[in-house]
Length: 283
Ligand code: MN
Ligand code: MN
Image 1 (spheres, rainbow, N blue to C red):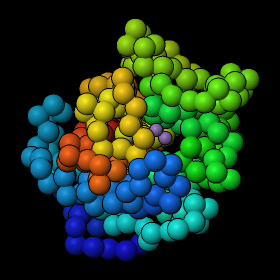
Image 2 (image 1 turned 90 degrees about the vertical axis):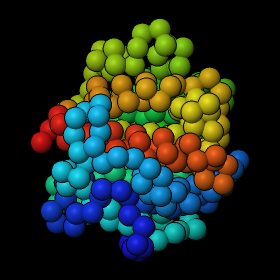
Image 3 (image 1 turned 45 degrees about the vertical axis):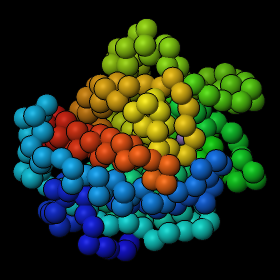
């Protein structure tokens, strides 16, 4: 891990005393359209200073919650090395019974994270199905995340929310393997909290937020923007619903070179809200 002076706002506790550990994972070597996600951890850290430490919505002051910003992993050029480095770092955090908040970088980091947990449901918020078996010859590509994670936790222990893009092959494979996925229009009809409530979930839930699940109107600066997405509020509703069972999360695919600033600000806001709501529900 490398340390810089730039920390996520109000994440000033040391590793030992903290319950939440923020870790940056800068990597974008498998980007298929817009590169730049490796710059996201620090862009999101910078954006986090925009906010008051007190969160009106939850009547909680982040300064009162033990959060540590542990810095960022070193940059890797090879996706397999990157995934292994994420797994190793996540294991270290979990061994100490802490809650990892991983900031990508590309979505491939979720593969490493999933490897570090036992017996979990993984909820993936994503515009894309990411269900290719390989992409441009790379198995740990960000286009293959759901597929790889399904091999780790079991296809029945994944729920994909906000999907609105995939290839014909992906949908055929997803249906054959009974992947549980909900499109944006289904979510608009049923409500995201209601869908989660009715899903069969394990006691431990890991949440992966690919920022492109959010409509580009709210989150324009992502690697693969896909119109007609979820609102930012729906993402927060999802977090509130799973909070009592949440054991870790990631937020990935913010792409600062294509951002007007709003995407990093929203990512920072989502992280801050998640910390508050998980803390309130569990500690
Ligand atoms: Mn993705
Ligand atoms: Mn995506």
